[in-house]
Image 1 (cartoon, one colour):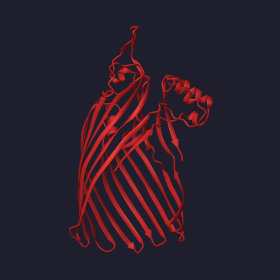
Image 2 (tube, rainbow, N blue to C red):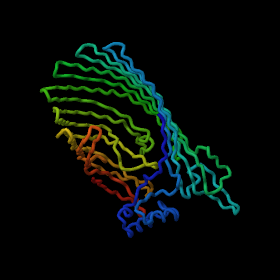
Image 3 (tube, one colour):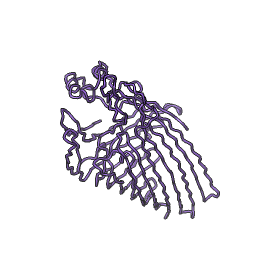
Image 4 (cartoon, rainbow, N blue to C red):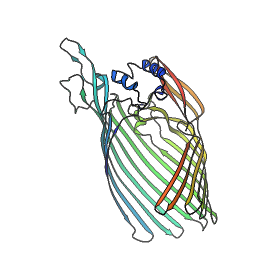
Length: 450
């Protein structure tokens, strides 16, 4: 399988005054950011255009262009009625870039020398077109085996191993000032990230009787990260981290009446930080891995026309990586560890076949998502890179609504025709953002509602 995309960038955002069609506030916003966000006449014309549709970018090739190709070889074998095996080999190749236009950018940001013009004046800036590349390879192998040892006992085991290499580098492909020694292939930054991931698991499913089933599994996983080189801000990156995880899970499933089922489970899961967490971390605090302890208690009722499900859960986190609301320089979300947090709630769903042609499906989740205690660090780049620490107690986790729900009604006038109507609800979400205005920083709490 292979596919490519070429997507124009638009993640920068729209000024609130532009959305609200408030000319006075938009003018204030413009003058507050003249020379920082809005740098040339084209930016100004673009901002004050009469069309409500707005994109900060005006360069026609401000694109994300990427191709990804997958090769998979899957072999399944069942030598007996009791034994099943499966082996999968896979390789994924990706290659692409962001192309970006930068107004009057500094040569030093690209390790380019200054130019002395005919009058002896040093030129240290020009309009720049750059490309930020990603060239990556993923190679892996995984296998599974299942053995029905006895009529009431099933054993499963498996392994997975893969290695990933991602080269990140950038080129300057064009400049408004003629650079006699401009080499379009020269990499002004270049770093390589490598990740090796190996895991093994075993699982047992034991049917005590016709009503009760026990299951348990255990996974061991080892991950190694290594990132070396120079990042796009010309900062030297040198990361080498290894993780060993043990992830157990236990559960019981019970059919206590003809149409009634219940289950109870407990699981531990560990997750390593991503590459972006290492690259975007602040104040020399390397990101930590997350640990989740999850308890679930569920109930299900089902007959020919009605299905009801209810699930209680409590998820206790250590060092959960939560979204801050910030974006990095390519629009990716920034995350930070919080020491202790939890998510607790109840999930409900119903499926009802009202008639042969009409059906109704609905679900709703109420969840309490809290950080027990957290010290937020706010950087003020206008006052010698000082920082302010704000202590939060029992605060909401960002981008985590307390209520979500959905309702779908479906009509089937013919076996080959379905007509559906659906509605979704997402409750309030919160985050904190830092905004710079007139030389000082403001802390703004924002709420998004459905």
